[in-house]
Figure 1: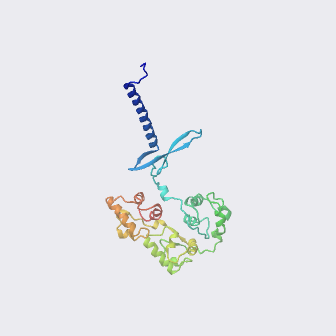
Figure 2: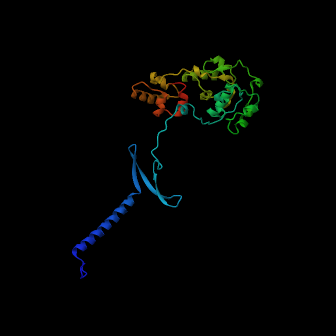
Figure 3: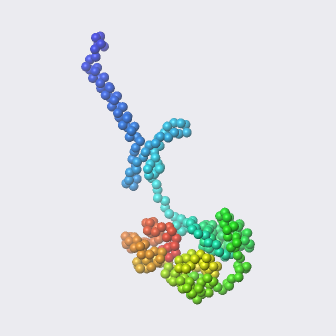
Length: 301
């Protein structure tokens, strides 16, 4: 150590170097902390910014959690595969429940759905009868566990057992096979509606649900309710057609496909080499949605 108290040139340079190093470290720390609030993740070729936000845990300690603008801070979303059950047995959305006289011992699945039950709820009634169950009085129907709250009270006055009904049992028509004369004999169906029903089933390839009669001009829910007890539908009489072998004219002639959808189907079929087309493929490629699938599955495969 120098006795005169003067600092040498070497000591001055060392002090300046140390000061510069300290300043540099502080700058790096500042820049790094300002950038920690943002990072980037890549998913399917796109970038999403992650914002770091401060929160407090249960012990009062400060922690940092990422919140994304696209994925909510979790891993990228996965595409859920659609099972056959989800496509063919969805819970229907009942837009307008209908009331009409029915016998719980003979009421059909579709009639129960028209009254407001879901497929699963209605199937409990059908399965109960299949296993030998019978309804002898109105209150017996109330015991079905699947009925939603208030449903029995809504329909109880419409429950009318066959033995109490003044029905001409010979006046029953199957909608996919009856001719115009047989249809005209059904109460509520005159010559006009009989001819319209025949045209409707020919144009579509058959009738698969009673509600399709509402597509006829002049048919309303009141008239349909009067018809329901006297008609049956045999869907096995509907002949399915193979989408791989249909022409544009054959596809577009079906009202549930039409010209626009027919062109989309043919483009997909041509792109696949002309073979291997099915309703499941159309659904997977978003050419049709699950609502269209519900009706098209009766006519095509």
